[in-house]
Image (cartoon, rainbow, N blue to C red; front, top):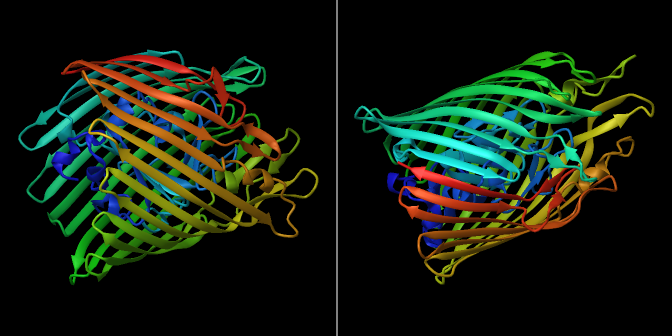
Length: 617
């Protein structure tokens, strides 16, 4: 993305300009959004601030087609395309990254959301891909890829302080200092602290699930010469979250940090090399469910170059090592208690210009070797046909896998007199073959339309097999199919007002092998809303006032005939007044239509009204 565009708030752009915003997640190279050969949506960072968003999961509510379900005060389950994990492994088929650093944990193939204390004010955009991304992003990018991109330090020279308090988001404080370093560098540092209140139980009592966290970090960007740039960034955090126990609650202590370095060599727009490495450490202790210490080291190199006039190639290699040590609590244990997992990978993808400026064919594959299932291939073939400068038709066939995690392989239950083994060291990867077709168009009348349809063929999905007595084992004895349609329409009614309507329909049909004893499959089929809809308004009102709102609908979800959550309609708003260029006052609200509602499980999410003061220096 060019420097001028990086410094511009995306929510200030009209629809034509938004279609030309450069994204990187769909093809691992910069390209206009309208040309992306995938179902992709960009969440503008400035809109997050204007809506008073405080956490990363709440930011993802702004993306159409994602099912963001809040379990309690601090935990979430997030899924796409008819899948939203299980009660023990939520969000287990989406790869989520922060500036190229994976937030995924091999413990349960998900994200520990209470540890993601990102500074919302520093997010430039969030690229959300619905559909498989295994060819570029590897195993576990089965139903989506979410890439959180923070602003370059070069675009963050202003210092900022934000103070806020609300009824459920109890407090939020953030401070950022930024500036130039020497003649060729820029840097910023931040500190933030916030607290979330407990959820409410169905009987009106408190459901212990609050959290408090404090984090700090930095980012520096350096121009080494006309072709080479360097980014070094890092974060550290410490906090605690409450979890319910029998007759009370317990505090989970959580802490961690990461450091990332990335060097980009780009002598021209058609040739570049990126080398990136990061270290990520975290520790969780005192939890009634599990305790864990994990250290991850990741190193990758990726190249992009154009050859022979028709070929645009991206390729790369990578290595990841993740070491963990788990704590034994009263019931849940892992055998073995410690494990080290290594993954070697290589990928290549070629975009071939079959008809100049009209038809492109994209072919590629990723080869990964891991310590769990061995070698995994994830091929991909896609095509993009430009009907004209403002409309494209795209389609693709992809294979993606989710490799087993520590829960799948090593989980055991201490029943007092005996240990019941649930994990299975022989369990295989879950496999998905996806068929996708999409259409994207920007009309002259300030209207845009984005349609995506898909059919997923599912194989070797996990089942829980039983001997009819007390022994259970994870196996791969479920097959099925998922299908759906996703629509996003946006209308720039005036220079100051933009409307966006989104709708998704999704369906899942699973079946077990004839001799399977699994009884969980039927419940998994309905653990997501068949219908999702939202209406978003972005209004630059007169007198330096902004008014933004999102009305969202989610269908009911069930598990095994029991209701996990009824259908609901909710409203979120953000109203801001820029008193002076240095001072903004903001009033925001979430879940405004009900005192409380249930989204996933037993916790009821209460209404939050918040006031904030933002000062820029």
